[in-house]
Every structure is written in C-alpha cells, then in structure tokens.
Image 1: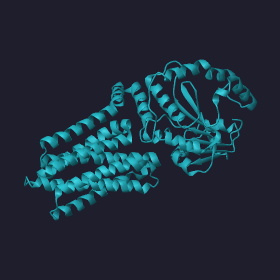
Image 2: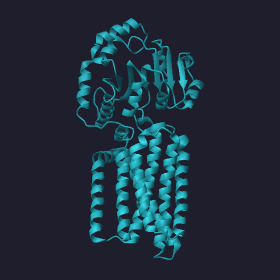
Image 3: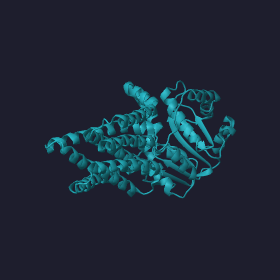
Image 4: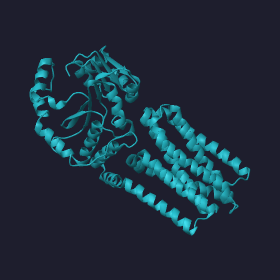
Amino acid sequence: KEDINNLLIISGGVGGIIREFLKYRPEVIDYVELDPLIITVAKRFADSLTRKELEDPVVKIHHIDGRLFLKKTEKTYDLIMIGVSPPSDLQINRLYTIEFFKVVRRRMEEDGILILYLPGSLTYLSKEMKQINRSIIQTLKQVFNYVHVIPGDINIIIASEGIRFSHFSINDLIERFKAKRIKTRLISTGHIRYRFSPLYQDWFWAEIGKTESSLNRDFNPMAMLYTLRYWSAARARIIERWFDVVEGSGKKILLIIGIIISGLIVLNFISKLIKEKTAVITAIGATGFSGMIFQLVVIFGFQILFGYVYYMISLLITGMMGGMALGSILATRRVEKRTDVIQDLFYSDVAIIILSLSMLKFISSISLEIIFIFLALISGLLVGFQFPLGNYILLKERSRVGAVAGSLYAIDLVGGWLGGLFGGILLLPVLGLSYTLFMVCLVKLLTATFLILARR
C-alpha cells in the first residue's frame, strides 16, 4: 500500500510493533489490549521505546475484546494486525475463525491488509506446524481473495480482498522500501530478497500441501486442536498421540455411538428387556451427562461470541444451579400430586432433546448476553426436574430413602463426570458444537425410548 492512514493492532503491540508502524506516519493507530494491566505494567516499567509508543498522540488505546471492538466500531482500516499467539485456547482461537475473518473483512478498506503470525521454519515443518498453517490459510481463503505467506521461523500471513500480492516482485518491494527512506536495523535489501525468495515460497506451499487439515470455525475450533498438538509434540508426546487418535476417530466414534444406540432401541422393542428401574437409572445418568455438556456449551458459546467469559462465569453457573433448584421444586410438586411420574420423566427427556436441537440451530446467532443466562437456567431446570422423579420411582421398590437418593446421585455424578471429561477433551474440540449436541440428542433419545418401554 502507498499509504496507511488508519491502522488497528489487536494485542501484542507494545515493545516495538507500534514503533515500527509509527515510521509510516499513519493518522491513527487503534491499539486494542483486553487486559488493562498489560498497559499499566508497560508504563510503570517503560523504557524509552515503550514510552514513545504509548505517549504518541496517534496511538489510541482501547481496553476491550478485539472481536467485540470490530463489531462495534464503524471505522474501516487500511491495515489490521492480529498480534496474539497461535490459537492455543478458545479465547485466542476466536480471532482465527471464518466468522471472525468475515468481521475483519467488513472493517477493512477494499485494498486493506490483514496480518497475523504462525509458527514456522525455513528448514523443516513438522506435521503439527503444517496443520496449523494449512488450517488458518485455508480458513483465510474462504473469506479473502488473496492470501500470501512470508515463510520464516515465524510465518507472516498476509490477506487482502483487493491486493493481488503476486503482482509485486521483489524488486518492486525494494524500490518502495528505498523510496520510503525508513530507518531500520534489521530490514535491508538483502533481508527482503532472503525472506521473499521464490525458493522458500515454493518449498513452503509444497510442504503444507502434503498434509490434511480442517477449516477453523467458532464452534469447531480445529486450529486450537492443531496448536495443542504442536505444543504437545514438543513437551508431552503421550498427549500428542491422544490427539492423533481423537482427531482421526472423532466422527467415527459418533457414528459408532449412533449405531449402538439405534441397535439398543431396536433390540429392546423386540425383547422388552428394559425394566422401570433400569430405565430410570439410565435416564438420570444420561441427564447428568447432558447437563455437563449443556454447561460446557453455554460457557463455550459465550466465550466465543462475547469474549468476557470470566466476568460472567458466576452468573452462568448461578443460572444453571438456580435452574436445578427450580426444576427440583417443580418436580417435587408433581410427585406430591401423584401424577404419572414415568410420563413426566419421559417428557423431560423430550424437552432436553428439543433444547439440544434449539441450541444447535440458534446459538451462533445469539446477540444478547442475557440469553446465555436464560439457556443456563433452562438447561439446569430440565436437569433438576428429573432427580426427584427418579427418586420417587425407585423408592416404590425400596424403603431406605438415603440409600436410594445416594445411589441415584452417584449415577448422576458419574454421568456429569463423563460429560466433563469427554465433552472437554473430545466432543467439543474435535467434533464441534453441532455434533456434540446431536450426540446429546441420541443419548436422550435412547433413554426416552427406555422409559416408554418401561411404562408399557
């Protein structure tokens, strides 16, 4: 670009990046840093470089989530730089997804540029490095017309809607560099020729073409999985092997579970093996599993869409727990009226299936934070509603209240433990939100079928 007037840096600008951009004399640099303590500490222990960066009137500091800032601002930018590390957690991953890149594109000039960084090497790219780079690059290509990579120990990824990078030769870049007369310590004409060497370009594209990877989406954070594999390969090989298994088998596992559940439903229709006690215990265990998945999905979804999950975590958990309490009260009143308890248990299973399908369909379009609290409340209500019903049914066979309640609570906890374990490390990271909620539907469809058979 000839001129950069409006520039946005999302994190990582203090300590040299801002200084380099100031050399191009932009009109405004909007610097977004979520944690205000980073700026406070930087000012407190500032050297001359940092002090000049933060005190320059061109630099406007915003303490807000980067994604939220882009959604709220009406400005468009000539250049946007994402200065965060590779997506090793959900907070960072949401800045590398198709959905986020679409937001970025709307806030860029037609000839605007997006810059981000990924791990790299000029000698050898491991499988994990290839997957990270390929996933993000392919994700960018879904949104931007042109994507260019400057290979190195840190790969610089550049994307644009209107600038075809292949039209610029190394000599063009060197001439522009000389014309700007910008003083640099590292960058020289020799360095430019080295970094933009066609040899490295061809080698890089050939290497990442040798591996397969998936696109990175808000609710299917594959780049996060690849980054965790990358770190695990260097520090914990046993964990890296686990990632190999779950990545390759995730959808197969879901298919197998679906086949098993379908088989059990058919088998029990034929043989009528299911007794009332078995149906109730299975339903409560599955509800514990579903409740934990719902909690993870609500927190996961809020984190992705709004970013401020830690300041809302207490309200989200309170909503879930409050819903459980309300559900228990409502169920107890139903029991006192001597209603058809098995039928109530069945209907609550159906309600959980409906909630799962509704979340699957609409969660990505939620724009109000309070809706997530409402979702936590409703999911908690359905989970809490089933426990008193299950206790009432089982107490008809046994008189010891403590033994029945304790046993059923243990089943509920085991279900929740399985939901937390597999939901956190297999279902949501590998299968994504849609497949995970669909699995909840399958599990509750099985238990609802058991309840119908037991009632007959």
